Length: 141
Image (cartoon, rainbow, N blue to C red; front, side, top):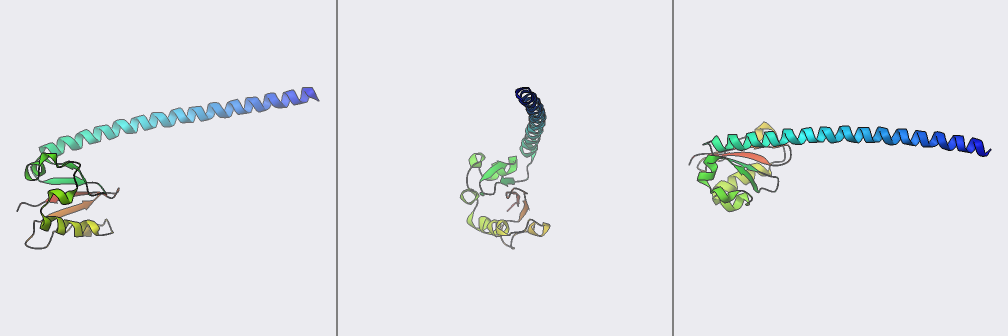
């Protein structure tokens, strides 16, 4: 019987080693895929930074916490270049923020959310992002 136990243990050890090698190969594959995605994200972020830097249209990107993540060149001139990281309410005039806040508060992310603010206030266009943030185009005036 001891010989049978040794054979069983050897088979078990071979099986465990095969499983560990398979798991290690899968981890390596996932790590490579993650690295490729990180490179893609870095490239997209660079593209967005370049495009925002070229835009005279005042565009503000906010997170779901309503803090400014990015500004176009036009928005930087209109607000202040140091607005990134600040709460949107602290950099916009009260009437503009009130109109914008109403749009951001809407629950759905449908195209119906992309409507202009009430007449008399600065026109706004709000495009919601899947993560809860939004891209905001401020009007002139």
